[in-house]
Amino acid sequence: MERGRLSRATSSRPSELPMRVQDSNRMSMYTTPKSKQPSFGKLSTAKPQSVTSERRTSFFGARTSGASMTRNSSMSGFGGTEKIKDARPLHDKSYVQQCIRTLHEFLTEQGYPGTLSPKTLQSPSTKEFVKMFEFVYRQLDPTFEMPTSKVEEEVPAILKALRYPFVLSKSSMYSVGAPHTWPQALGALMWLIDNHKINTSLSKQELLFSDFCEDSDNIEEGADYNKLFLDYTAETYSKFMQGDDTFEDEDDAFLNKLKKLYNVDECLLASMLEKHRILSDEVELLEKESQTDRLMTKRMEKMKLQADLKKLQSYRINQESFKANLENKASEQKDDLETTASHLESLKHEQDELLRLLQNQKFTPADVERINREKRELQQTLTSISKSLEDSEQHKWNEEIALAKVNEKAELKVAEYHKLARKLKLIPLSAENACGHDFEIKPFENGPNSMVQQKTQIQMLLRKLVGDVEEENSRLANICLSLEESCEQLNSNILDKSNDLKQLREQIRKLDERLDSGMQELAREEQDWAAEMESVDNHRKLLEKKVNYGYDESVQQLKAAQQQYHLVLQEANEERRMVANNLTAVFTTAANHLSITEKCLDDLHARMQRSCSKAVEEDAAAVQNMQEALKSFKSKANRL
Image (cartoon, rainbow, N blue to C red; front, side, top):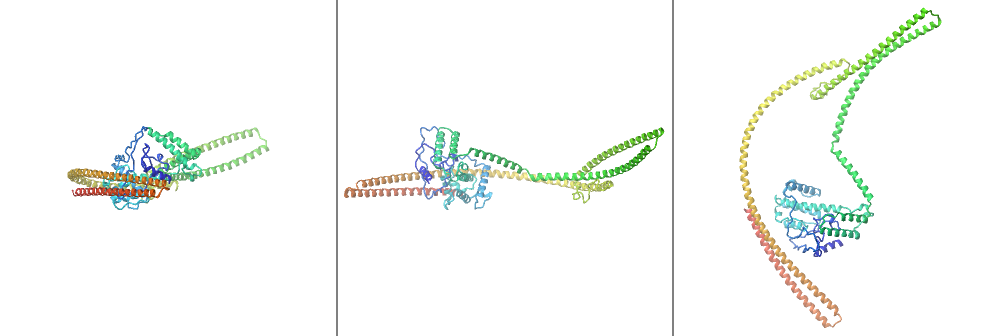
């Protein structure tokens, strides 16, 4: 409440200091949130009064500049008649389309009750624009009600009351959807939307360092904060007026003082920043992962795994067949080993009997020689048998290696055949060109003879398929020849039509030249009417200025009379208190003097009211005459 009264007092009194800004509302759109008042710079959304119901006086007093100021204000005459050039590219189509998209998104998010369509926002009518303006302004001031009459005058007046820095003429409100007026109206709506966004962000923003203070829910600005902020504002403003544009040292000092005031924990702040960095990295990583199609990669991995599974299954089948062959060979070797073992056992029995005989009988040297000779023969026989066994095992190993190489080559050829068959859509059975036949070669499934049967069967099917393909190829060649003939005929028809099209384009060019000449003539007439309208508007503004000057002069005279009245009344009261104990005659004389003075003031006030009402009536009659002349000009322009 105190801050509100202070702002009202500062806005109503004239400037006493050579400062460019006296309250937060004058430069609300030219200041940043950091350079605003301690109330965090909320946008003033007071409901503006109607210009048709009450006249406004100038809000800005005379602006002076101190002798000690070294920096001149670039905004001289702020609030005067000087027009500020709009730096926004409102005549750029891409920028206008971007503004229309932003407006559509804002109205949709805020729940605009009317119907929205791109065609409506490209060239809206005055009624639709007024509805959109009322809806956007209600986001700033929920109590706002748009007047039902003279809305074309109310909208520019409301924007002027909100300190909109650019001029939106009243005449543009009669044709808002025109190409030369809609960008300016759209720019005004975008300015209101930006103000709403700033107001919303500032209203939702927490107090500075509120998370680090004790009892953060009960923090108020208080005298300490106000003193710090006022010192910071005074110091930065004085340096700004001396020519400085950056205040980094003052900002750092102000932040340090605020940290000391609210007991900011630097360690906790650093830990929170580290957590924020880690979370930001995680979010960036998740965004990068989400950009890649994980489902497609998983599907590709699944297809690769399925292909590997098929290869492993075929390899397992080959290994099982190879294992069966090895088991057969192992069983044969086992049988040979058993026969060899039985033969060895018989030889051992014979050796035992011979040893027993050797121990039981006496041998002659001839018997010993014969036995040794037999022993050497047996050793030679055993050596030859073991050597033949090793040779047979080496031969078996070489044969197995050669068989494995042959199987590997056969598998490669079968794999190439399967790959070519898949390209030709012959595999599997449900393929397009399979026709229900199985073209897949399955080795080692039904024995060694199955390969020959499969080969003959597949060769017969392939010969039949080649014959069908050749027949289809000849049929398609005949169709291609017929299509080429029809294409030649179509090309001749297109050539004829292109000649006709050239003639039509020549006629269109002539019509366009006529249309351009007509449009140029209309543009010249429109410029003439616009110049005439501008002169009439300037004359009307001059009359309004004169009326306002007369009204201001009358108000000043009235204020002077009221001040004189209050002064006389105060003197009379003072004299009445001083002569309260004097004689009744003196009191009667003072009372008579007071009544006479009041009567004179009443007469003076009545004369002033009569003169003011007369001046206002004369000015209103002049404005009415100008409006009638303007309507007549418009009617003439429409008839022409």
